[in-house]
Image (cartoon, rainbow, N blue to C red):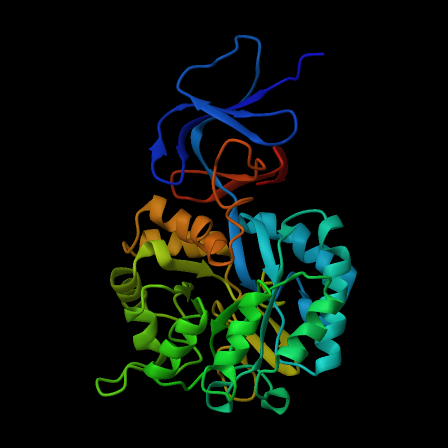
Length: 387
């Protein structure tokens, strides 16, 4: 039997470097992307008609703690399934389940649960674990518990990685902690990416960490020493050192649009990742919730710690971050989509399997209207979410 090819007909297609006009995108029988053509290659082919809509790559969220009432730190397989099942409604087809600062044993158990099940959970695809902590500083702890913070130890990371069956992809640390340079070098030898966050580091401390191999600034501006004209600090490093990726939470609460634009203009949109830092209350509307050991109140589009009003992660959906930076006029649609897909994937080197529309890649893509509202999400060439 001759394999059957399906074609997606749409008004435009967001590729890595350009926006292709009205045409046909082949979806192979094995669920991978084929080629794009302005004309239909086969008269008898099956056509899915999105002539009023645009096609873009599935979004990649490299920093997300939870969704729909569940959190990665619950260490609950059923909860992970709910998160993965729900994220396509946000345009996300790939993500890194993200932990919080917590006791060693609990982090190991969470890593084990994710590592043992990541490949079999349906929905958005898990491509690694992001350990956000626990090697942070108390000055910028945010919604993380300082009781479990300490200096980085490679043997500790090795223990978690063994539990995770090699699924740990990234870890965030504060570069002013003792031993960070050696830790970063050893982590990179193990193919674990190192990010800098929840830190009071100086510019020089950040520079030394980046020279050792750190490659990402965690949610730029939030949870870090700010920019000062005599001490550029972490924000100065994020703006000035071009070899790293800068995360941004573009929900309008964590970072002012002008501040987000400054990062993009100074650092480059090709090195800026849109992330959500979404916690369990994402997708739940206004409610009372929790983040780790802390009570959280969700109101007016923001999640805040009940005891002091500090921001506690976000309830942002990644497609909303894309919409926001377009609406704010600080990124073109192609730039916005790339920052939430390809650039994020590049930051942890999973862009060989996701983050772009490319022949041979899994056909994970989203369907958008003219306002960039999400109409549908496809995974492996099949509709997983439809509005």
